[in-house]
Image: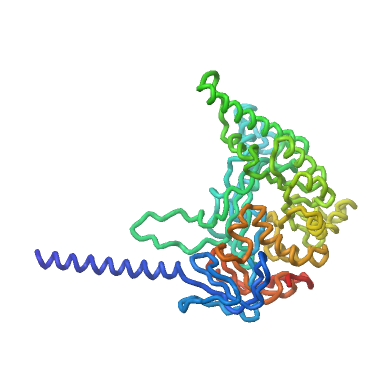
Amino acid sequence: MRNLRTLFVQGAAILVATLAFSLTGDAAQYGLTFAIREARIVTVSGATIERGSILIQNGVIRAVGASVAIPADAVITDGTGLTVYPGLIDMSNDAPIEQENANAAPGGRGGGGGRGGGPAFDSREEADRAKRTAILRPDYVAAEHLIEASDELTQLANAGITTVLAVPSSGIFKGQSALVNVVLPPDDPQISAVSSYRQGLAVVKSPVAQHVNVYGRGGGAGFPNSLLGTIAFARQALFDAQWQRDATAIYEKTGARGPRPLVEPSLDALKTALAGQLPVAFDANEGREIDRALLLAKDFGLDPIIVGASEAADRIAELQQAKARVLYTLNFAGGAGGGRGGGGGRGGGGNTSVRVLRQQADAPKVPALLAQAGVPFAFASGGSMPAADFIRNVGRTIREGGLTPEAALKAVTIDAARIAGAADRIGSIEQGKVANLVVADGSLFEANTKVLHVFVDGRPIEMSETPAAGAGRGRGGQR
């Protein structure tokens, strides 16, 4: 019995030691110290450091400067002849979100589903409720529907886009966006424990904004599939949310006497927007769409952001008066706009109107006009273009549009972070900020520049390829 007890104790000790060794090894891997040494550092928030180092620990920039003490155990990236930038930010992309049903809004009117080919319903009321659910989704929270990895996210990271504003794609009231990193950190050691939730590790900030599509194409077949119909629906939904908020407050104040008001979760989710506590981002390209979005914001006391904004140059005064910010969609590859989310208008081809052709030609010039007018803006892809095209078109705003390289870089870093309310966390190379970094062999928006290293949340990602950061863009870049 004594020998058995001794063997049991010794065996337990060996098991504990083995587990401890494994945990220590994994933890050491997770907590590695990294450093980029002898590089040119474009901090964005301050002066460029012509030759300096960055120390990264636990995902955070611990030190940056011309003279940084680097621990002996640090994993070092030699930055000689290279330039370090803050990680780039795409301010509208649905790539991190679980695939949504593009035909979520049913088109049926009971029976066989009508023109829209949607499911059959027992009554018109049932069909209308299903449609309302599909297009009125302000309670949809992007941060609760994130995917862990995809080829598209990998491509974004390889191009130097480390963070995106994850925006839901369906509905008129589309839901609440989240600012997320495109790569998750390594999994923590999970020994004798139920594995922890991972998707939240990507979230930098949530929610960022409530998103509303005023194009008139978010409603499926039938009403409200037009600009005026969409605006009418949005206005009524906001009125309903106000009434529900006020009726609930009165009911609670009077000690729950009188009829109990109906509480609809989707309308309840609009309270923060109505209180001015959460910005409202309106998809609005044309001047008339921008006008109606800003009027809606004014009438309900909303804090407006305009997304798309292809005709923003024609509404400078209105944007200034409303103190609106702009997320300008860079969808003008090849000089032709490509769809509703883009900065280049509705389409292209042989039947394109003169107005749209002019809009497409002027698309790269809009950001410079916004900058000159002092309208805060950042860049967005709308999820409708490859990552390389997004960066290429930033270069076009410099080369063809007259935007300064400094302003262009800020629009994809610190200015984007400010609009998202996360400038204290990302967007520049400063001590204490998340270590999202891009290391390139030249000026970031210049032709043939290559992204060589990318750090997301303080960890180097595995580069599947070495794309040219400025391939095909011509000259002109951040100096």
